[in-house]
Image 1 (cartoon, rainbow, N blue to C red):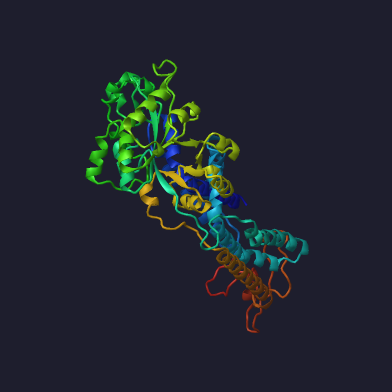
Image 2: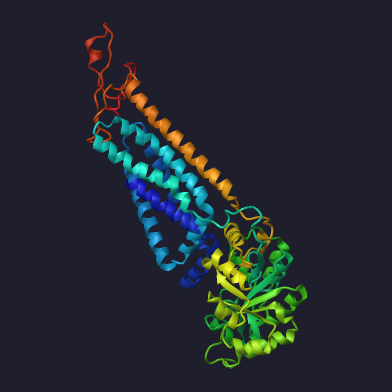
Length: 534
């Protein structure tokens, strides 16, 4: 039971972390804020989860094999310690992640919408394998109460698994011809797996990869120049520690543009490699990336205007003692107007001073950052919602679409999550991997209801047939094999008690041979060893 509980917890931990892969960069960023330096902690956690699961899975397989032959699992003390370690680490990790990153459970919930049909097949297969030891002990028990005790939970779980598809829902299970168009792709800070985030090269890579829009973060310098920077400080993505060592933790908005121009915004990328999925970059790309500098908003807008790409950005309010604290929105609007970009290419996300922005820039596509009643959105001229992917809902997306309000989901980088957004009807997604998602021509896990019903029925029927045959086989063995007694064996005092058998001896057998132990694993006298001696 301890091994089984440890296996279940390690499986949940591994599944949780595998499905959280979409947000590994966020986890690494949070870890960076805590420890002060960049490292791919997400990959370390994945390796630990995989090792723990692999180890305990091997022990569980060994236990099932031994139980299937009526043997006891005698673990070495080192494996007992290992099992406890798996149990404690998996449980501790799940508790810690639930406390520090509880929103990621929404990702796990969403993942079931695409993985549930396949998890169902895996669970049915596992129950079919487990039927072997269950049938063995069921047939060997003479006490009816113990028979019910061992068989009832097994049948209850099996019936639940057989019927659970009735409650499954996935937008990717749909009739042919009902799938909507592929969502448009907006580069999250450009293409941060190909070039340093929020640099001109990063946005160029997005355009080269076929992206439809550009997403960024805008901060206002001390002398009123809007520039692109996600963090509140410059230490993660620039060499401010080397150039201005006494200002490492200072707010980025408190630097003048002259000071910002002295910083390198690319060397950290080639040194830290912030994404495990970056792959290999050519020497030319590495050199270009290492020479990047901080990008102005004006440069991004000119690039988007030439390439006819939409632009969406978070605009950060400067600190209280900043000279543009009261006029930061006006100053940003001035830069947008000076760039001469078509107003329809701007997705205006900032809610503050929205009415004023609408009056001076009526062409902006007003975008709202959370769900709201359709009536309220229409009154504020909202034409697009920018929502975290955890808020994904096919019903809500359809409801907003009926009111001519499109939905953008962020940040969607894993193919399974993009497939789910596609099936749910999202108009666009913000992603770190435009180059990968652009190559997808259909959602993963897409199937018709008829195909799914066929898969479900065939799986359940095949499983029921295999389990029935296994029970019949064990019943035949217990009644028909020479080594088995004609009457049921009493094991109610424990699975591993010794039971007696009758050994047919020929008339010429001597008395010494007749005194051999009569355990179920006794072999002939030619050098074999009994289970009791083992």
